[in-house]
Image (cartoon, rainbow, N blue to C red; front, top):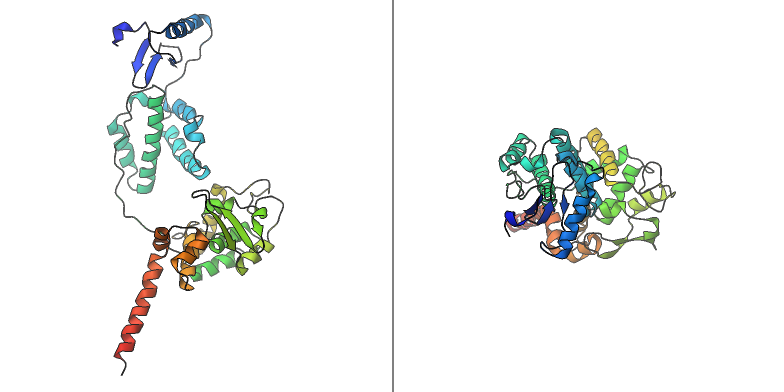
Length: 335
C-alpha cells in the first residue's frame, strides 16, 4: 500500500491506519483498508464535519493525561503508581507544553544527564519516560520511542542492611505503643513481610496468636506466629477499621506514601536516614539467622526463596561464620 492509494487525510502509521486532519481529533480505523467497513468508517468521520470538534493538543500534558487514563497506568501496583506520579508531575512541570512527537534521543540523554548528580532520580525518570513515550507511539502520535535503548547511568549499588539493634531501641523510644509508627515497625520486623503486604493486613487476618498472610507478589500463604513485642503493639492499637494500619481518620488503610513519610520523619529525628522502611524485613531475616534458624525456617516466616534468604542475610551470615572461624583458630593455638 502506498500513500497515493490512501484517501485524503488518511495516513499509515506503524501500528495502524489513522484519519489525521488539522483541527480534527486523530482517529484510528478499526477496519482493514479497502474493505466496505473501512469506507463506511471514512464516510462517517467526514460526516462529522459540521459537528463541534475538540482540538486535542498534542503536548506532554495531554500525553500524561491520556496515559493516566490508560490500562497501562491503571494496572500498576499502588506503590509503583505513586512512584510514577512523582515523575509524571516532574515531566509536566518542565515540558508540559512541548510536543512529544519532536523529542529526539539526544533530548532524552540531555534530560537524563541534567539529573546525573541524583542518579536514582535520573534513572527512574528515564524508565518512566520510556513507558510514556511507548504510550505516545501506541496513540499514533509518533512512530518510534526515543527513550528506548538509552542506557541508565552507572551507579555504585548500595545494599540495604538491617537496622542496628541500638537504633531500633531509639526508634521504639521515639514511637511509643499506640502510635502507627510503632505498629508498622513491629509488624514489619515481627512478621518479616514486605511493607505492601503489611499495610494490607486486616484484623481478621489474626487468628490463634498468629497472622495469616497472602503475599501479593508471590501469592504464597503464610501463618506467622506473633512475637510478644508485636502483640503489645497490637493490643495498644485502635480497632476502628477492618485494617490494622489505617489513615489518620481511620477510614481506610494507611497508604504507602503516608507510612513512608511518617517513618521518614522519625528517621530524620533519630539520625537513621541510612535505614528505611524496607530494611525492617532484613531485620526479621537476620534475627532468625542469629537465633540459629536454617534457611528453611527463615523462609517459613518470610516466605522468601532460598536465594533471597541468602541475599537478605549474607552480611550477618559472614560475620557469624567469621566469629566461628576465629574461635576455632584461637582454640587451636591454646596449649
